[in-house]
Length: 228
Image 1 (cartoon, rainbow, N blue to C red):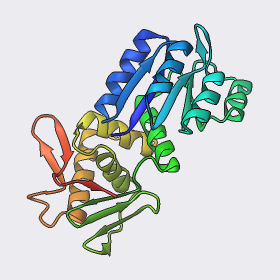
Image 2 (cartoon, one colour):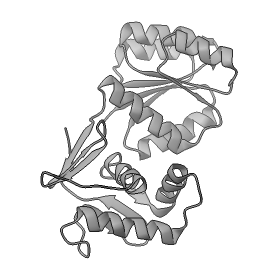
Image 3 (cartoon, rainbow, N blue to C red):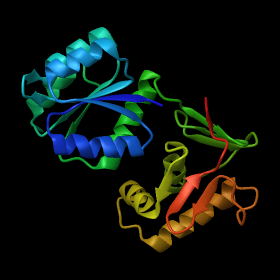
Image 4 (cartoon, rainbow, N blue to C red):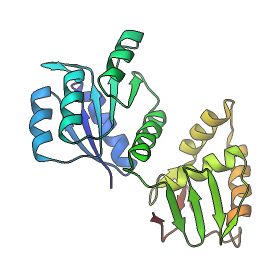
């Protein structure tokens, strides 16, 4: 389980982010000030840090430098300031990414996973009962043979492999497909893509082992998931 260090002084934002990220399978530690963050940094190890730039007793730029020196992990800045100078300053201080508030929750989690993969903190190959997904190469194999997926089918599969063990609601999947397609995707369209994906990756689409239905809620990745 990847460990996220969240440094955010707005209690409401922090609470919502903690719920979101824990729901995505991350472990989250939170600090509201620079002083608290520095104290926690000395006694804990993390895989990635989300840092608000404006803090009550300092700024995220200084924290970014401290984090990089002590643990050399990816840093993503969270800030309401979207001006170009702040972006440039943050990146020059060593930040790996920059997300401006308000942000889409799913976009943030995607950015986090991308930063973890780039740093080697998250797996790039997922394997499950003969199905192999290489996210760095963008390929999918079943029992050693490559499966050709459309862009939306592949995006749909990535939602599942990036959230092993989690129940994914239909609303979340609709949001993901809508963002990827750049156009409205309705409930019927989602059902069509689920069916098409099952036809390509399942031995028996009528009795799926990979993308399993959780009645009345959504879907989850089948049991026996492994990441390499």
